[in-house]
Length: 105
Image 1 (cartoon, rainbow, N blue to C red):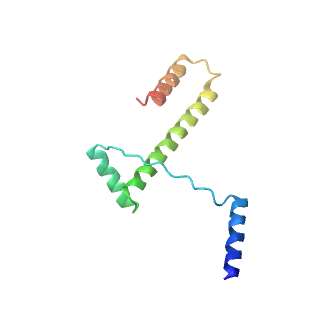
Image 2: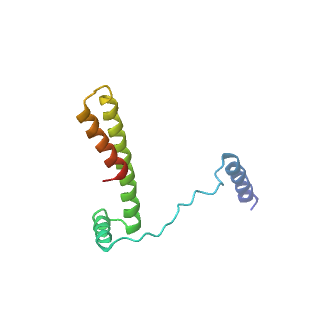
Image 3: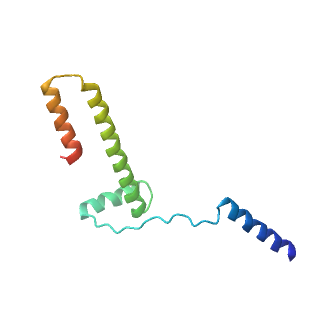
């Protein structure tokens, strides 16, 4: 069938020109160890959202990272607002909040 060969050849050339023949990025795979209580929480979350444990862990990690970025952004916004204030108590409170943000304590 000459027609199908021509079509295939054209589609290959079009794919090469548009870059569609490139390999897709492969997601990295990791093995994680979870404490039994945490594993139970993740299992309940996975069941609640009707997904696999792997996808639940990925979603929870993404949410945690987004939350950390939001907290950091919020803190720096408040810090900018209060930089002009020379109140020592306020400065101490901001230092404590910054310490908590950085160290997680």
